[in-house]
Amino acid sequence: MSGITVYGIPGSPFLRSVEIALKEKDVPYHLHALAPGEHKQPEHLARHAFGRVPAFEHDGFALYETQAIVRYLDEVYPNPSLTPGNPQQRARMNQVIGIIEWYFFPKAAAPIAFNRIIGPKLLGLPTDEAAIAEAMPMARTCFAELDRLLGDQPWFGGDRVSIADIMLAAQLDLLCDTPEGAELIEGTQLKPWLKRMLARPSLVATQPPAMLREAA
Ligand SMILES: N[C@@H](CCC(=O)N[C@@H](CS)C(=O)NCC(=O)O)C(=O)O
Image: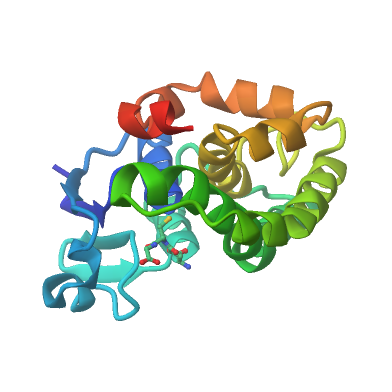
């Protein structure tokens, strides 16, 4: 065994990003699945001070923050590399990761997917339509900009899948189960790109739980 344990709530796109990276590299790991709410309990707060998922351990080395975990895996298990060797392609990958972390996830994907899928189906909460409406301008900007940055390349970092592709595919797969996500991706280069990503064995092996899929 690799000595790797990943902690997270199945269905979480950030958890899935780490699992996709491990599958791409064919590294075995143990998934310690948490129930919703368990991530705010002292046991998990000791792993992740902010009470989020995923958290990660490798032979006693503890880490959280998805991109830090995936970059670490990419150094420890370099084949196949998930980081472009070319500085401009690497910068593009880093730019997309920044967009996901600063704009796309917190201001667009999270409010829409939470209110359409996670809240009503997993937590029994009512849908906050105002929160979805408020997220839509940012969602539109994100889809337009990510579409522009992908352009006619097969992957965000050029001719090979990179960390940016992995992190965005995990987010978009869930979001595009909502009517808002399905409408926003229509007619963009992101749609065939997501189809290519979803066909990869690493994504087939890490699909969100069926009850979340049925949710939207
Ligand atoms: N910056 C963190 C974000 C992690 C994050 O927000 N995860 C979500 C699930 S996809 C979460 O833990 N949500 C639960 C909560 O906010 O209580 C990372 O990259 O790992």
